[in-house]
Structures are given as C-alpha cells and as structure tokens.
Length: 172
Ligand SMILES: [Zn+2]
Image 1: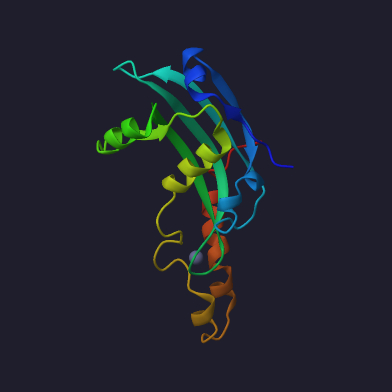
Image 2: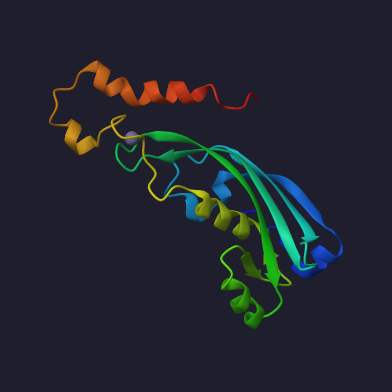
C-alpha cells in the first residue's frame, strides 16, 4: 500500500507546519524506470513559512542515496539526492501565471489537498541530470562490448567505479 501525505497547503503555512520522515524509493512510481534497484529510502522535511515578501510557501529538503541505471551500460550509478528548495504557493491560476514569469521563483498552486509525496517526486526528477550515465570512458554499452573479446578487466570496470563511490555511502 502506498503512503500518502496530504496537507492543506495554506493552512500548513499559517500554522507554521513541519512534516518530516522517510519515504521508501518504491513509493516514487515515476522514478522506477530510472532506478537500478528500488531499495533504499530518502529523508524529507517540509516546512510551511513566509518568504521575505510575506508570501506563503513551502521549504522542501530531501536527502538520501539511490541507485540509478546508467543509460549506456545499464549498470548502476550511486546518486546522491540533496534538494533544498522553496516553493511559493500561488493562491490562484492568475497568480501562478504571473509568478511563473519570474525565473527566480518556483511556484506551485496552493491546494487544500496537496500531496507531499508527489511534490517530493517532482523535485527529485527536476534535480536529476538530463542524461544519467557514467563518465565518458568509464563504461561501454552492452551492444558495443559484445564485439570485444570479453576479458576480466573489461567486465569488472563498472564495479571498480562503484567501489570508488561506495565510501561515500552513509553508515547505517
Ligand atoms: Zn555506464
């Protein structure tokens, strides 16, 4: 069963609301195609607050690690998620359109039933690189490596890269 966290966004800001917790990667349905595996979780905190112009908004922090699939070799890439963003709440479509013209603002429409998980998923997708793949020369596509007589060094290469990344993983 999937977890839903729904807030009444403007009331949440008025009450200086704070919600935090952990969400399993398996909850982020739209991310599934990008994930090498769905194990793991992200921590989040959403805080209702006013910006410097006294406009209501949500401060969103998301942190954690996930394994993405390299689009070249289909191997795994450890990706660090570290999002800290402020989303202005527009009270109407008109206000949303006006604020959208300002590139420095992230604006969403205020809703009495705003789904935080959806919002977090949006922000994660926006934070991902356009093309998820190992650095140039660090891997080759399965199709092209079929032409090369398989030797051990070649097969082990993606894992050698992972070993380098592993030391950045948080200790449980
Ligand atoms: Zn790769």
